[in-house]
Amino acid sequence: MIRLDSLSHIFKSVHRETKTFFPHFRWKEVLIFLFFFCLSFVFWALQSMQQEYEIQLQIPVHYKEMPPDMAFVHTPPSRINVRIRDKGSILLNYTLGQSGASLDVGMQETHFLSDSALRLSENDLEGMIAKQLIPTTHLLGFEPRQIIAPYSKLRKKKLPVYFDGNIRTEPGFQVSGDIIVSPSTTEAYAPDLVLATITSIPTVYTEIKKGNKTITRKLKLRKTDGVTFDPDVVSVTIPIEEYTQKTLEIPILCKQIPAGYAIRMFPSVVRVTCNVPLSLFKDLSEKDFAVETLVANPEDNASGMIPLRLTRKPDWMDRVSLSQDSIEFILEQNK
Image (cartoon, rainbow, N blue to C red; front, top):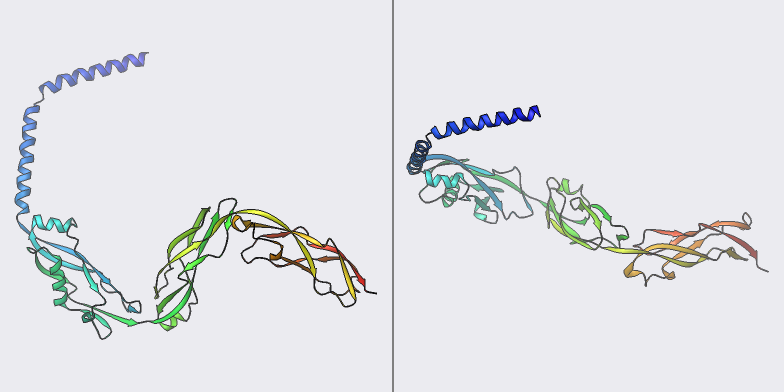
């Protein structure tokens, strides 16, 4: 309680001093001063914007329409340093990036290509830069003064494309077939020594999480140093369906019974259990599977146990189990 009384006393004291100070503070004079200060700043800024200044800019250079069988030996300049002069109000557009100036060099324009090199002379660059400037702007100089970028022709090789990634489905769902990549091949352009080491091209690594339906995505091909691809983007379709369990009874086959003998198996059928997509549940039947056993030498094993093996199943199926992995049998010699 003593602490609360003390805080209350301090608050009342500060409140009295504040009320005493502010009535004597000359707010009117301060506001008038601030108004004329802001007004004078505006006039000064307007006057400054009408004066001429010099600034330096960096204009990006874009090399477009590069043929897939062509590559630069060395990376050409990506920017041109430009020095210009104009009124401050105009230069403000350049510094704020509102002018959007850039140099687009079309690699299909053959007048720039000669002697296995892209050549942009000083006059070429000056004309291209001038087109990007506002008419009142004076071009004072630029660097580099010219661009000479040697290029070379590349070899071509058709390569298969495959999906690279990890697929995780929700419980009860599985990949129900082959992953389809379209187009399935791409043209790779590179020097002979590089192409000789490449046999196939993967997509960029992609993770699929909680898949519960068929997925189609546009994926880029994984970058390889010194190699360009055409196309460099493919469509990947991953079939995902809901699965259920199905059990079938399959007759056991014995194809290599020794001559003069007959075999009796206990049991003569085995249960096969597998996961199957709902769309194929009705179509899956006993004829899609085969279970076999092998009798090697009847004298060594006239009766006993022999192993079973699954010899036929649908190609898309990867999870199959047999109710037992061996059976009893008896070999009987024919009379």
